[in-house]
Each structure stands twice: as structure tokens, then as C-alpha cells.
Image (cartoon, rainbow, N blue to C red; front, top):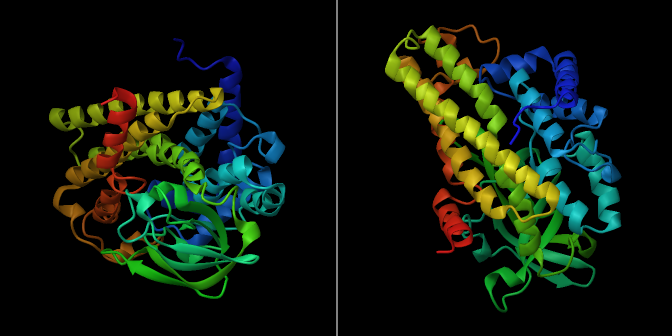
Length: 393
């Protein structure tokens, strides 16, 4: 196996690196490299810059307006963006719902929704989890009842990431109670400006507003917003979750954060400690192994093979690595990582610091990353899936 990039691929990397260096706003990359608070404007500004270039849908085929890059080119693009300090693209539109619309949506749905996703103008949210229906997603209860040309939707979604900004939301809804739970689920696209939708914030321990509850009270959704066939939504959801778990692995951000771990360790004077440096080395080895797994999934995707079982492994390892690098940052800073001053996570704050400026976001990030082994299908559930599909047990 030749793991070296070809001269053509290296040239492509340099092209991407030069473009990102020229077009990524410096104030945004400063925030990303220092884990400062990103606003909606920050995230959407970068999305629109990518969209103007035709790269917000960097993994899309040319027939849908994408660049038509192969899997290696996509990987290099993601890596260069991450290392330069670009915000992680909010995945719900370009990475998650867009492939479903491309594969199963009607021509009218493709024409209506894909351009707004590519341009970065339309913000999408994900309506999957419900109280009691997270990892056991098939038990969802949010109901859509067909009445003429509309579905009437009633129920609740929860942990809706950045749902307060959503223009549209893609939802799994129950359209039948017959047979197995999976067989009665449909995939519905919903305009979040529709009457009867209420978004309620879930404020986290650090005061952040990242997740939400979304309530549906007799919401009328045109039947034309059904993706594919009624009661076939579980099939489409599995297609999406393969993309989500690959995205959750987030190996390129892990590579960038590894360098941040090293910077903090050096600044705090612990980098020369042999045992601490051993932990950094272990993390780096795990990140390299994760990158090889990501490339394996992307290669399988290119060849048309089912990669969901390996995607589960990616989700497990990627989420554990994210927790590990935030833990190492905390350990490097020691007691100075513990005080929480929310204002210190805003760019340009001039108040009194407890410890160095890089210590301010460490505790909040550490605790926030406890979620990674739960969302997208908890790691316990993913291990059961891997056991059944890979090991046959």
C-alpha cells in the first residue's frame, strides 16, 4: 500500500491551501485556533465564502453543482481547511440532508433545496432525537398524519443543535404504527417558519445556547415535502447516518487540536515531562489510525460498498479522541483550567484572566465534549452494531 500522495494530489493540496489562506477571514481563524465563541455570522460568513466558490458542497458530484472531487481531494480539502483554522462546516445541510435529497428526493426537491444549501444561504437543522428516542431512534413518536395534500405533524424533537438558527429542518416522523417500528417512519422536510413550530432553548452548564427542543403543534407540511416513499424513511436515515458518523469522526479537527495540545503543554511547562509527552504520542498515533479508517470508509463509499459498519467504528474512535485531547489540555493547564469566566471566551475580552488566556475555554470544552460518545448513536449501541455486523456475534 502506497500512502504517499501523488504529485497531482500535492499540487491540489497547495491550491487549496493558498485559496484558504487568501479567503478565510483572519478574525474567524483566530477564534477557531483559540477555541473562542463563534457566532452565527462567523459560521455563515465562512459557509457563504465557500458557497460562492462552489465548495460548500465539496463532496457533491458535478451533476448537483459540486466540484466532483474524488475522495482524496475531499480529504485534502477538509484537512487544509481545518489546519488553517476554518470553522467546521455546519453539517446538517451540505453533509447530511443534501446526500439524501440527491439520492432519494424528487427533481423538484433537488431544484428547490440544493442551491440554497450550496450557497450557504439556507440553514438546516436535524430533527431526529426525541425524549427517549436517541440511540433507540426507531422508537420515535413524533407523528405525521396525512390529510389531503398535507401532513399534520405533532410531537417533539430534542437536542436540536443550533436549531435556533434553522430555516428548514429535516425530520423523521411516524406515519404508521403497523409492523416493526422502523417500517412506519418517513423522512419529511419542514419549513421552520411554519405556524405551530416552537423552538425552546436548552441552556447548558456553561450558559451556552447550542441545543434546543423543537415542538410541533398541528404543523401543516405539504405532502410534496416527503422525501421518497412514505414509511421508507428508515432506509434514508441509515444513508444519512453513514455520512453523519464519518463526519463525527472529525479527524482533521483532531489533527489541528493535537497541535493546540502541544502549544498549551509547552506554554504551561509540561511538554518536557516524559510521561506527559508519552500521552501526546499515544494521542497522535490514535489520530493517524483514525485517519486511515476515514480513508477506508471514503474509499468504500466511492466503490459503492456499504460502509455503515465501519462508520460505527469511526464514530466510536473519533468521539473518544475528541474527549481525550480536551482532557490533555485540562491536565496541561492544571488548576488554571478550572475557573470559568464566560466572557473570556469572547474575542477581544480585556478583563482579568485566571492563568493564561488559553486556559479560559478549557473546562467548558472538556465538559461539552462529554456529549460526543452519546450523540449520533451512543458508543455502547455502536459497539453492539459493530459486534453484530463485523464480528457476526
